[in-house]
Length: 266
Image (tube, rainbow, N blue to C red; front, side, top):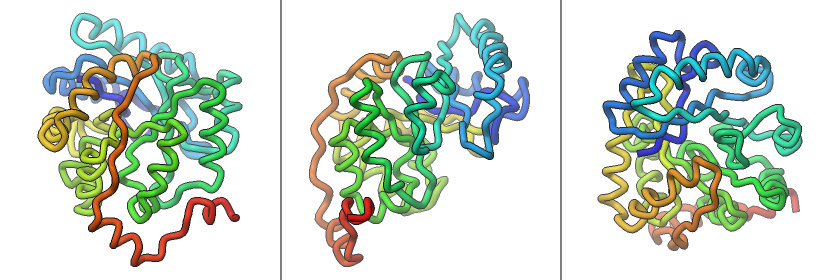
């Protein structure tokens, strides 16, 4: 198994608070059967900038953990990037980076909205050779209310990373239901624990792989084929998406959803 999303790096954001906690989190990943674990501290302007503002410290902590566990689990350094209009420029200048320094990047939205500039930004990133993985789309209110936005972004090459905790009900029943639907329609391409601590929001992830296998065996097999390639920055072939269920379409239609162009101000 590959874990695409964790906050194991200590003392840089709202994740691990100490080296001891980081070690407990990694041990939990190993016990879950994870072979490759990405360390993805937040990079949010004005809130969590320490990981990228002090890359030497990041590197020292990462190298210590990597060496300590090199015979038991592979650690990959990366960042969870809060979307912003100058994100491409930050990547190109080296201020931030993708998985293992590659052009495969983990990007997050806030939990309420899809920024009006997102489509244009992702289009430019794709043209420049970047592969965007959107973190936990199931937790975003706008996407849950208008699933068509997911299809628009996926048509631009955006892939989706599911939080394992979403299937455990950590973020509410609506998020859990939406997560299962994403799996069924082939719109989950990576799984992450999004582990923040050694308890509560921890590193459990095996159940998510198992539930995906049960809900959509074909998508599960493709996930296993793709995960290691994707986290190494290699290109992958994903399954075509399926139509959203009629019950959800009716629910969305009753809300008189706005089109994506309306979000762009047209």
